[in-house]
Length: 114
Length: 114
Image (tube, rainbow over all chains, first blue to last red; front, side, top):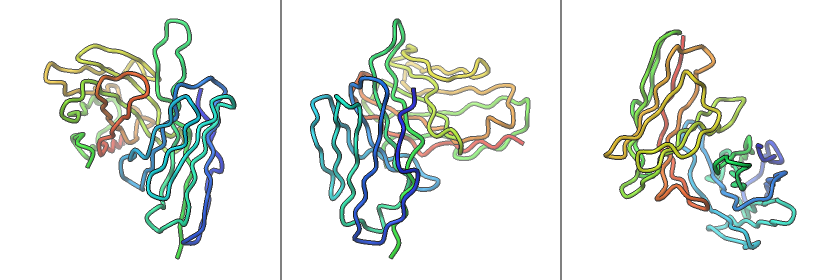
């Protein structure tokens, strides 16, 4: 089942902060965050494992609350280069004889303007 | 540059035709994943291979098939093409294809069915 991302889109001025949320109805092994610029491949940002660890990447960090099955991506002091669509991908235990998959949300479009 | 290569970059074909998309994983990666990305569906997982064997299947149509060869490159075959198959097709790779592993995406093949 596809995780739900919010907001769907956000416009920021350079230097402003943003939070992107990702929620799942399933218990999760991990949450993966990617950024995709228009016409390009998704680029890996970070992976969050069970344990609620908060990770950082430049001025982008994320948290994972496994009890709530939620993850949040924090972008601080945004730069023009942060523009793009952010996707969360969730890994959940397979159902029955099924196999594990990475299921992506529909994405959050972030636009940073001067 | 993720190290994953895909060919061709663009493909234009007609309904009813068959095409083959090719992917070479990062050096050392044994697992390959195929995704379809359309405007309204986001990134949809199609199928995963690990060291030549199918490991997981997602929303892959019966008209589509894939395989991974001994040199670990993979091909995705799309047949009886329909207008709705127009999309970006991404290949990703990871080391062992297990849980909590990072997937690195190739640049994609843009397919247009006319």
